[in-house]
Image (cartoon, rainbow, N blue to C red; front, side, top):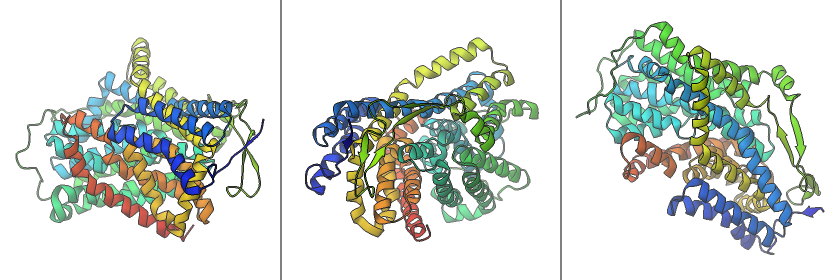
Amino acid sequence: MIWTQDYDPLGSLFISTLVALIPIAFFFWALAVKKMKGHIAGLSTVLIAVVISVVAYGMPVGMAVTSTVYGALTGLWPIGWIVINAVFLYKITVKTGQFDIIRSSITTLTDDRRLQVLLIAFSFSGFIEAAAGFGTPVAIAAALLVGLGFKPLYAAGLCMIANTAPVAFGAIGIPVITAAKTTGLAANDIAAVAGLQLGILAVIVPFWVVFAMAGFKGVMEVLPAILVSGLSFGITMWAAATFMGPELPAIIASLVSLVALALFLKVWQPAKVFRFADEAKATIDTKVNYTSGQILKAWSPFIALTGFITLWGIPSVKDALKSFNIAIPVPGLDNLVMKAAPIVAEPTPYAAVYTFDWLAAAGTGILLAALLSMFLVGMSFSQWVSTYFENLRDLTFPLITIACVLGFAYIANYSGMSATLGLAAAKTGGFFPFFAPILGWLGVFLTGSDTSSCALFGNLQKITADQIGVSSTLTVAANATGGVAGKMISPQSLAVAAASTGLVGREAEIFRYTLKHSIGMVLVLSLMTYVMSFMF
C-alpha cells in the first residue's frame, strides 16, 4: 500500500501547523514545566505523535508504528553505540585511578583562577565533551574546580559558559551525525559549516568567560594566554571539521588547545595572580608530582581513542569497513510513503533502509580503543567487563530517551508533520537564517541535548531552507551551533551542574547567572548565520 503525505491535512496551514506543534509543545511542557524524566517525556511525546499522524494526517497505523520503531533503532545504533563506548572509555580511566593523574597534570600548571578555568572548563571540559558528552564534561569540570577552591556557583556557572564551542561535535560528533541522519544531508558538509561557525565562537569564548570572571582588566592581564587558548582551539576545530568530518574536531581542538596553553604557561605567567575573595579551601592536592611516563599512561586511552577514530575516518579505510554493512529495507515503509508538492517537484518515494554498520560505526572503533586501553592501563578483563555492564546500566534511561527522541523525529518526518512546520516557518522568508540558530537553542534548552535538538528540528531546518532558497546545509548546521548556547540554560544541564557542585535545589541561581551569556551567544551565532546565508 502506497500512502502520499498531505502537508495541510486540516485545510488550513495555520491549523495544521498548530496540530503539528502539539507533540513538540508537549515535550517542552513535560520537561520545562512538569520536569518529567527525559525517558517518560520522550515516550509520551512519541505516543502523542503517533496518534496525531494517524488521526490528523491519515497515516496508516502500521506505517506510523514502523517509522517510529525505525527511528528508535537508529537512535540505539549507531548513535547509542557511540554513547555507550565513549562513556565506557572515560570510566576505564576513573576505575583504574588514571583520571586522577590526568586531573593533576592539568591543575599543577598555574595558581591563577582565570587560567585554571581556561585549562579545565574550556580545553579539558571540551575534551570530555568530545569523548563522552551528554552532561559528563560539566559534571567533571565543575567538581574539579570546586576541589581547587572555586565557590560552587562560580564553578558551575563558568563551566556552563566555557563548555559551548565543542558541543556540536560532542560524543564523537553525535549531534552533527544525527542531523545528517534525520535530514539526509552529508555529515561532512554539515560539519564543515558548523566548524567554521564554532571555530569563530571558540576564539571568542575564552575572552567571554574570563570577562565574566574578572572584567576587562582581568582579560587584559592574561590576554596572551587567552589568545593562545582560543586561537589554537578555533583554528584546529575549523580545520578538522573541514577536512576530516564530524567525529574528531572537538577531540583534536581541545587537545591542541590544552597542550598549547600548557606549554605556553611553562614560559609565561601573569604578573598578578587572580584569586577570588573568601575562597573555599582546596580539597585536591596539586603538589603531587607524576613522572612523564605516568602522565602518558593516564592519557593513553584517549590517545588510543583519537588514533582509532582517525583510522575509522580515513576514506579508504571507511569504504573497506562499509563493505561489511548490512542494509535492511524496512518492511511496510521503504518507498511506500510518497513525498508530495510543494516539498518536492513531483511525487517521490521516501526510502527507509536501516543500515547495520557493525564494523564501520564509530562506536566500534571506540570499543576497540577501550579494549586496547585495558592493556595500556593494566585493567583486568573481569573488571573491564563488569565496568562495561555497569556503564550499560547507568545509560539505560539516557538511551531510552535518545531512542524516543529519534522515534519522534522519524514519525514527524514520515507523517509529514515536519514538512508542515517547515512550510509555516518558510513564511519568515529571507529572515529565517537569523532564526535558525535560535530554533536549535530552544531545542537544547528544553531537551538538554544538541543531539536531541538536531533530531527534532533538523528536518524542519532543511525543509524551510529549501522552501526559501537558502542553503539547507547552513540552516541545519546552524541548528547544531545554536544549540551549543542553549546547553548552559538547559534544565538538565543545570541539574547536572548543581549535583556536581553541591547546589541541588539552587538551579535557579545558576540559571540566572548563565542566562544573559546564553542569549548573547545565540545572537552572535544568529548574526553569523544570517551573514553567511548571503555567501552560501
